[in-house]
Length: 381
Ligand SMILES: Cc1cc2nc3c(=O)[nH]c(=O)nc-3n(C[C@H](O)[C@H](O)[C@H](O)COP(=O)(O)O)c2cc1C
Image (cartoon, rainbow, N blue to C red; front, side):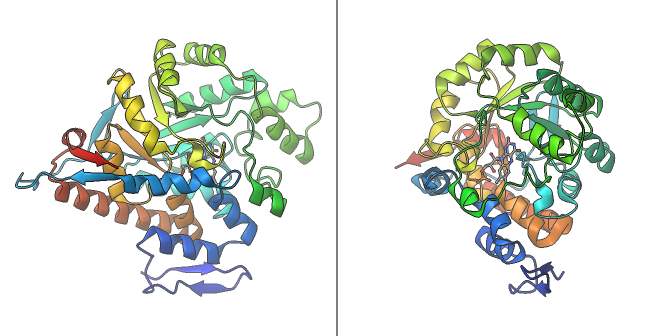
């Protein structure tokens, strides 16, 4: 298989690594950098502030080491997990990433199709480039979740949840760490806002509650309306309660870093939490996600699933998060770069490689299934 991409000056070039899709995260990232405009790549790659947390997210993995158990006959490997009444063949999900048209014209459609091929649930963002209905139509029958940014006009939130439910989505992820956009120095430097450029309007331009909230409907009011709606610093536990009451789908909070917030979520009847710092894109200086995980796993004490997000780059990272007690992990930037490099085929190839890495790493850790992974010894520095 040969991969080509459009370079910054729109000239089609082939990737300089073995003429195949790059294997390592670092090479995929480099190829994505070559394939995209400077400001678009920087939007995806960068973190908030001085990027201390973005860096810490991956660095901190090195502080945890696996102590494998050997001679355990791992010839019948089972990577499946069961969550919220569904059995998924792998403990992986694709994290919600908005404005995906920035990476490839087919955006969410390409990613959802690639995820469907491997039965990896795709979490679609509120600010996706295509609508819930478009994605559902492109991938009927595959597992999909919907990520909600609470909207200033709350009827829009409830309507989007209803649309996801009607389209057969299996869960709602409420992102709680983005009540306002993080202070992203590089985007400010490039004066770059993909939302203002119209890359994230798929769910809004098709939402009757959103359209009826506008005094006038034109491209300017739509784009401004989206930005005004998802900036919602008033978000609090009362909204969580209302959301829970509004749908029969499981509600999962994304962005939990403090054990007390995880406990409070359970008190409010929340069905799961995602330990995440948004890939270091929101508040710089916060704890790395992997360092936050063990204390949350401990207090949650298996009452609800604990998912992990922020910093997964290769199979062994997933193994470490699962060994520290996560029930499943979310992959973010690696699939976005793969999309930029090779479109749908690129995401497929990345997933195939990641799954191979995951299986190999599980076997070499001496575990036969994801449950056994949690019993694996981990040494922290
Ligand atoms: C370009 C980009 C856009 C994102 N958009 C969203 C979004 O719309 N909703 C959301 O909850 N998280 C969003 N995220 C955060 C991801 O869901 C995930 O938390 C983050 O990518 C994890 O960090 P990692 O990719 O470094 O592992 C976005 C991340 C990136 C890189």
